[in-house]
Image (spheres, helix red, strand yellow):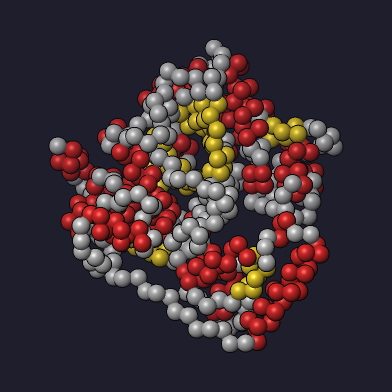
Length: 465
C-alpha cells in the first residue's frame, strides 16, 4: 500500500494511506525506506478482522475520515530521514562489552553478543571474494538500502562466521535481493522464517553438519550463517521488531540445512539445488520462507508402499491456511518441503525416483474440497469473492484435478507434483522425517550459485591450518 502511495506522491498526487492501529509503527518505518518519511497515515482503530460492521463503521467515521480529511487538506509536518554513516566510518572505539552495549542500544544486534566488526576482521572476509568491497549486490526493501560486499562482510563478522564462509554469505545476499524471493514480505504477520539449504562441495569443505542433529545449532557453519541471515535482514534490509517486522509470534533464525549428497548420489536423486537449476558439481544456496514445521516421527515400513501414506498424510494435514498460495492469493506458489532422513529416502528409492514420489504425493496427499474452501474464504478473509474450486477451474486458473461437485472429494494441496520440494538430510540411521509448510510468494524459493574466489583451495588450506 505504501509503495503505491509513494509512487502517487512522486507524481505530485497527495495521498492518505489507511492503516490499522497495530501497523502504524511498521508504516512509519517503511515510509522512511521509501524516501517519504512523512507519508500521511489515516488510522483505523483496532483490527478490522475482529470488528462487527457497526464497530468498523463507527471507528472509520469517528477517527479515520477525520484523518483522511486532515491529511489531504492540511499541512503535513516535515520529516527527514537520518542518513547512514559512510560504510567505512569507524563509529565507535572501545572494549568488547562497550561495543556490544552500543550495538544493542542502536538495534544493530539480535540481543546476543556480536563479534565487533573491526576493519582487520572485515579485511579477512574480503580476502575470500574477488568482488570489490563497494560492489553493489542489490537494493533491499523495506529500507531501500544497498546490499554490498562490504556490509555482507561486516554482518558476517558480527554473526560469528569464519572468513572462508564469505562466498556463501555473498550468494545469500544475492538471493535476498532477488525480486523473486520477495524480501519485502519478511516482516509479515505469520512470522515465517527463512530456511537456507546448501548443496555442493562446500558442505564437506567447510564442515557443515548434514547428519544427526541437522537443523539444530552446534556446528559453526550451520549456526553462524543462519544467524547472519537474520542480522542482515535487521541491519541492511531494515526489519526491526516493534517497527516494520510485524511477525505476530515469529521464531529465531534457522540454522543452515545441508543435504546429504552421499545418500542422494547413492539413490541417483537430484539435490534441491539441481531441482532449482543449479549447475552440477557447483555449490548453491536455496532460500525459502516457511510458516512452520513439524517432525514426522517413526515412519515405519520396509518399502515405499508402506512408507508414503504416513508422509502424504502429514503433507495434507499440516497444510492449512497456506493453501491460499495454491489457489487464490498467489495461485501456484505453494512449495512445501519434505525432508527425508537418508534411511527413509534410501528405502523409498529402491523402487521410486524423486519424481515418482512427487507424483505419488500429488495424487494421494489430499484434503476434502470443503475444507480447502474454508481455508480460502470461510475461516479467513485472505481470498475475497468466495469463489469455489470449481469456479477457479472454470476460469482456467487451476488444474482439473480440483474440479467436481462433491464437497467431500479429495483435492491436491499443490497445483503440480514438482511443487512438492524433497530434501534428504538428518540422522542416517533414524526413521524420522520433517515437513516445512511454505509461505508461498511471500518468500518464494530462490537459488544462487556460490562463486568461489581465485586460489580458493590455497586460501582455504591457509584458513584451516
